Image (cartoon, rainbow, N blue to C red):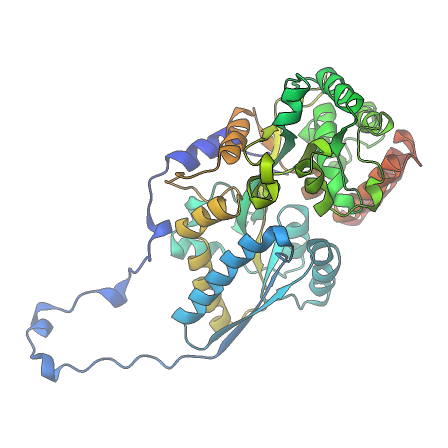
Length: 459
């Protein structure tokens, strides 16, 4: 596994880069060379235009997961890119399919990859998911395409989509995970942003005493629970701890891992989370913060569009963001942050020559400074490419960027490191902890059993 690059270096590069071909039409090459002086002296009437090549009928299926109300801005941007690409290329037709993210990742795409018939273009997670699909020969190598388009060096990071030096996917945005909080509630209760675990417990106790849920949670979807737990565990074991699980050098039942599970269970047992969380879908989590029912939620910056939009109502401008506090005695980097560029588009290795040519047109239009800036302003998604212009950025997004820049290092989520089968068992174990039907040591043993099986299968 590759170590994550320093996020602060990535951000500084993003903020200081000079605008270049990423935001231009890139109309260069031999076909645009001016006519020679002899040819230019010929009378215009005798010059015959070169017939345009006949447009070919090409169809590309494109699967996305932007089906929620909170994703409408991102979907609009995608639809605009699709329309532009079709208008510029007569004969090209995109067939868009929108499905649930979890269904796509955990069910449909996996089945299609096994059968060898994925969509032509599809959303995919970098890291562990991508590695499996590359190993199976299902992913198109994009290295020559992005080199030809001159955008390979325009991305903040391609680490999670790079396998053996080749690029097999392109991130459409970045993220970080941390705590969004209601500044009004904090001010009314005289609370300061906690920087240590003990301070977090103290703050949560005061919020709970005020009859407000300290940490909003919607735990019906397993991956949601993994966000806060992931950071708690990283504080205890470090990112190398997760890497060593895959090599067999570490076990989920080791002391530091048990401590991570125990810390998370403490939050559950102190009743800091939303009552009945296991029956609530993810969208309800952000709603708890915006309604004032919860003072804090741990989530990703992809939710910032909700917290800065019309849904925020009177709380617009009253939502803040801070990194998860340090945990004394932990083996991890106590000021690091879960931040990465792991969500993106992949392309099927089954594409024929004409489809590859049109996929290249889509990439050129989607991965431009114009679209990246729109994504930042309209959808509040952190750009995956380096931008020269950050004007008009919402104050909350500026706060997010500041928190990220102040983090010592960044790291990718556990489910981009451990095998997908292991991640599924983690999800079940966390739901058991939230439901108070299992203990940390039992959950750890169950996950280690899955880890052993996955490691053996990888040999």
